[in-house]
Length: 324
Image (cartoon, rainbow, N blue to C red):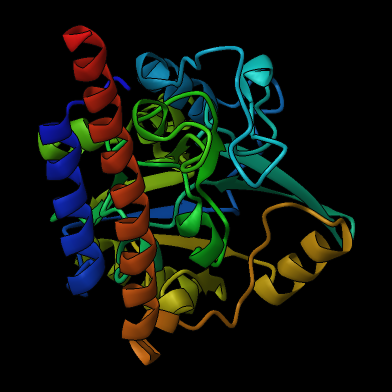
């Protein structure tokens, strides 16, 4: 056991408090937003890797997971999620790839879609994380704290786009109950949180502008300004908007010449992992289940009791051995 009794009790108290009270999420608009213009994206076809993808990987590479091996399954599962041998995979979201460019053909037209976290205004992932590992930042981005994430994947389950990805063999669960609780750590885009706190743009935005200049796919800035720009262009150019209403509103807007219903239909037909459903309701705005929280609390308290009992038993056995 690599965690002290005091440390475990402190963690248990913090987690249980989070479970009982819930992760209160203020439905604030957020300071920043991103506009992604699909009429301009060509997927960087002339380059070995899309600029936005490369920039994200380069900027965040020091934060990528380094799993302890061999990785053991945790009860009752007999499997685990390990992407560490697929670190170079760039055509989907992984714990090592937080943005990718999706391609879909519609009526003979190629459409390229940069995909990453939508950074919802009232994110279900933040409210539903049982360990309080997700937070909604004042800048409008949602962030996973990898120091306290157990990798339970609740965030992925409640995300309408299933964005967060899990890597086993890393995280706090290894120090507490590696065989019985956890699963790793969840990873996703956080909008280069350190950069935007300093008033700088995310790496993907800068990389795209360096390639395309004034015709860049990404536009990042004040939320109100971004929304006004998107609505104005949609009206003037007959474009379709995505992200303004989905899941109660997000900090990521898309513009397209093709209706997003068609885009989502094509993605479904191709059986893509990541789709773009149009009618996405924010479930946490319409219902809140305190009983579920209490059940989680009960389960965690039982687990905590078992671990604490094991710690005391181990100490007692050691003291009896020393006395002999």
